[in-house]
Structure formats: structure tokens, C-alpha cells
Length: 405
Image (cartoon, rainbow, N blue to C red; front, side, top):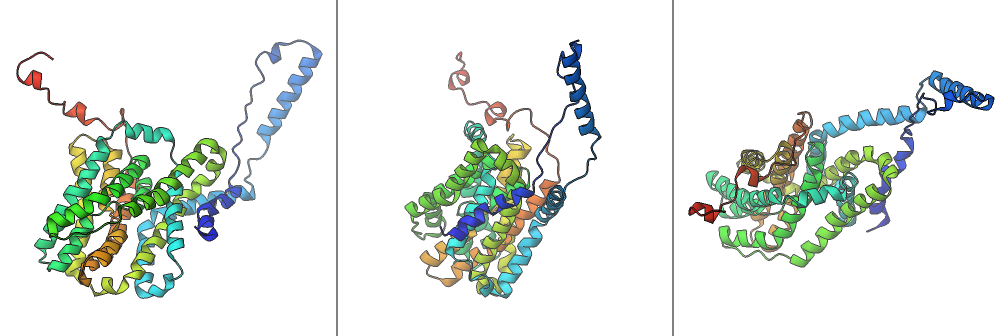
């Protein structure tokens, strides 16, 4: 990765200098000190008390750094809330002037993805993943939503809107690909479970090695070769490695992370907007050429997919945080990857158009859901995402046939 891409990952650390240091003071004299009757002890106690009183009486005026930092936090909160608006603006610029993002080469694209993952990684701890790994039911549920519900929904919507065979093939491909990395940012904004989101993204990305070709063959009769080793290596480089670096910083340099943590959402939003704009700029003509007869089914695919991704887990007994996470993860597909597959492995040019359209609607749907949920409070669960086993006890064959367990 070039130096500029690395700088993009570490830029927030420079701004950490404006973060005010937290200072805690206590007005209590050390236990037992006031009870000592020696003159020296009285002098020490007197000086300690007067010093503390002077500290307490000091005017609580903010320094320049504190004012700048407080102004930044307010602005950053507003900017994060307006994430859907930035997505629309960047998409509009990419459609109007695709050449504006010619500078955003593959190196920068990879760097932006790494920055996005790093900004999420510093919010996590190894215990978060251990907690999620001990309850794999949520990951399995989302995996089935990604590779069972979404492909069937895509096929059904394509048939319902009477799309021709090439467009239908591209539509099914969108439904059959893995979750996108931007879902991790939207999960963070929506107050979901970021560790769970990262595991789900990783699981579906690795699952794409065999699930995407299988689904395309089953639903379309087309064999879609996928570079399995390439997907695995990219997943490690772009997703797992930055997350691991962020978690390591959180564990071994907590004071440093505390200073740069307020900048993580902004880095994530900027990275995502650049990624969306770059992908849209590369396929601007197909998006503009696609009418509402294609725009609408693609929009419904992501919207209905997100709603089912929330409702089905909710009915199955999962908690609110896990349901929000699965909804966003299900709705937000890796449309850029779908476009690449269609470009490389589908003979008809029209087959790549649905993926191009999906880049826009995927980002908008996920970011809007994230911002809405951001302002809906989440009641802290008594347990970590209620177990399906607790709600639906496993089948006991001995008990079924009247035997004792």
C-alpha cells in the first residue's frame, strides 16, 4: 500500500492533539492526616487543603484546544447523522462528472477500505469477538438470510417486474453476493453490534467462494468462476488485518485510542463516500441508462431485504441490537464485487447493470436505516442476544418416544 493510503488510515491521530486531557480532582484530605496533631502534619494538611481549595476555586474556563475539540465533536455528530445526504451528494458528483474520481486509484480504494476497517477496529476488544463466537446462532441466521432469502427475493422481484434474461441474471447475482464492508460502519452508526457485523461480513465474504457460483448455477444455469484464493487474501488484507491492528491499539495503547476514537466515525463516513463515488464513477453510464423499471426492483431488493433481515430474527428471539445488525448486514451487499463478477463472467453487457444500480441503493438504504436507528434508544438486554435454544429447546428423541432423558 502506498504511503498516501497509510496516511489516510493514520490521519485522525494528528487531530488527537486537540483532545483535552481528562483531569479528576478530589477535595478530600488523605485519610487520617487531619487527625495527626504534630505541627508538621498540620502544616502539610493546611497546605494540601489550601492547594485543593485554590484548584477548586480556579475558573473553569476552556482552553483553545478544548473549544476546538468540543466544536469538532458537535460538527462530527451532525456530519455522521447526515451520512445519507453525503452519499447522495458524492453519488451525484460521480454521475455528473465521473472523471472527478479518476485519481481514486486501486491503491487509494484499498487504503480507504482499510481505513474504514481500522476505524471500526479501534472500537473493539478481543472479548467482543469471544462473546460473539460463543453464540454463533446470529452469524448462521444472517448467513442464511444472505444466501437463501436474498437470492430468492432477487429472483422473485426480477420475475415480477418482467426483466429480460440478462438483467434478471444480474439481479440474481446482486442477491447472491456477500455483505459489503460499509455495513460495519452503518452498524456502528445504528448502535448495533460491530463485532458481530465484522464476523458476519467475514463469514459471507468467505462464503462467496462457494455460495455465489452455486447459486448462479442453480438459479440461472450459469457457471460463474470465482477466484477463491484472491477473495480469501483480499478479506485478510482489507478486513481482518486492519481490524486486528485496531484491536491491538485498543488493548496496548488505550490512551492513544481514547484520543483518536472521536475521529473514527468521520473517517468511516469519508472512506465510505469515496468508495461509493469511485464505484459509481466507473459505471456511471449504465446507471444513467437504467430506467425506473430497474431502479425500483433494485431498491425494493435492499429495502425489503433489510426489513426481513430485521423482522425474521426478531420473531426468532434475537435482541434488538442483533436484529439491527442483521438487518443492515442483509440489506447492504458488496455490489462492487457483483459488478466485477458480471463484467468478467457474464457474456451479456446488460448483466452488469443491476450491480451498478445496486451500488447507489445499497449505500442509501443502509445509511438511512442506520441514521433512523441511531436515534431510537436500545434497552440494555439482560442477556447477550437471547439464545434460540432457550426459545426453542432442541429435539430430544428419547423424550419424544417416552423415554427418560
